[in-house]
Image (cartoon, rainbow, N blue to C red; front, side, top):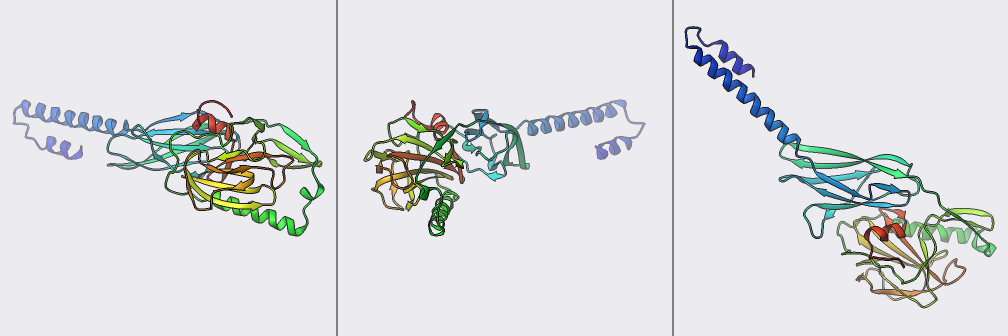
Length: 313
């Protein structure tokens, strides 16, 4: 702009007024084109959609991102964590799963999308509401040895918990699962996610999964394709299997009476992992089924409503 003004001022007054008029028109045209170019650049924003728009405690949502042409997705962050993303199966763009664990403070939280283009790094932010949710309580009476652990048993319990959590904290870059998930058994929910259990008058952590009715010996199927990341006989959950579906998503199967798949084996959706039972701390035969996303336990029932097959167990 300064350069053009300088040149205009140097034009001799003896020249025809048409020259001045042409220079002024050129200047206005350049300013107009520059403004249009900047507006075009600023309008190149990703198209983002979140389903559902509000996430209840223990719930999750599916994020869809479609980027402007010539740009690329660099990263997604939510609740202070990097969120794995993956290409959409049937359409252009990317998807990511967001989860809000029970420890998240209800309210608005920023979902940050970082994307690159010819102009450099760009950041887009949308606000996500995490909604408070009240959970029921249940009082149970069990053998004293199952609640008050001697040092040796307490050490075993903590080792089990650490082993499971260590596996679930790992993020496999590859996505193993395809299409929708299936329930591991065709049954009904006996105990919901988030249930606050009180054993012999002593409160315990909220229920980290759902308990499904499953008489002993019922085949337990993998909810989707993945890799068996852990097989362990735990003091509380008995024979336990953890399946890695990739991108930080895991399913957990507990109290099994029999394990039929070895650790490290790749499995397909619907493949039999083992048989239901009552191993570990259990008052009867059933299947405890859990969902873990980036090391955080989420509600399997809400998970299946979002990513599962139609219907209920």
